[in-house]
Image 1: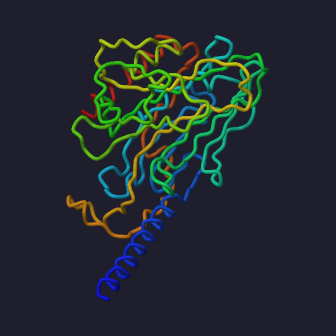
Image 2: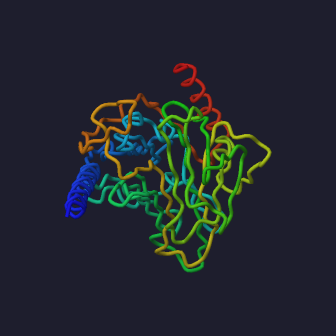
Image 3: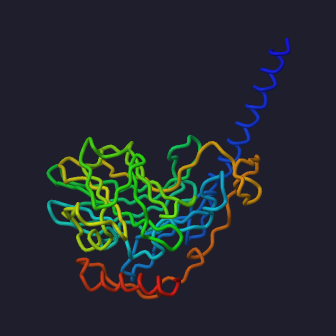
Length: 342
């Protein structure tokens, strides 16, 4: 009888704990948009909507609440804090185009109900739609990853279309990060092909502190053909066709998910994910070092803040052709910021 009662009490407590976690995640998924950024209880997405900028329709991602179990990853960069550092390449019949430098089909906008930013551009006779939205990653019910999507809206059957989605991870102000796959460090430039592409990858501070970014490649249809880890300058200066140097040590790490051009692509979607990785834990009330102290406080959505509170460059440069000059400018900007923040 005692065992039965104990089991009943245990079941009730477990159910209440689960309900608390579900409530916290549901609150964390609530989205707010202000025309400048989109955020929920985990992430903040900011997209460059100034057409005169060379970074038009590029984006950066930060945490708001990050992981619910800790507060030490709150309000941190997940990608480099200026839009210029990463872009997506659309390969059409062998010619690489940068998304953002095409012809607008619709005005870009944040869709609060759809929890995403939507835009579409035309490249010749091909129309591509970019959707950047919050989605579940590893924890059911927890929308703590950015779903990065490029859908082929219009194309001829004989158009060969591919894509390369570049991600430039940065945690806090550090982009010399430790990249790992399945717990194994990726110390040098590397490429994974076809069936060897890992389901996910991790970028974290060399110090091993709580804040970390996760990439997720599984679930994409069509599946990517390559996952590349390389020095940032190598990927940035090559819109397409970069072959990693496996003898070159990673310092300023960047990642690229690539689909080789294929025919009959109308309606197909190139998708990858990047964000944080939650567990079914709930954030403590205070930032105690003892992270085992868990409560059922909710991680509610916050009011969006313009430009994430950072001072971004007032004048961009054209990425047309991804010229060496623009790469040098961006690299100098990074070094200058590093010196200022050092």
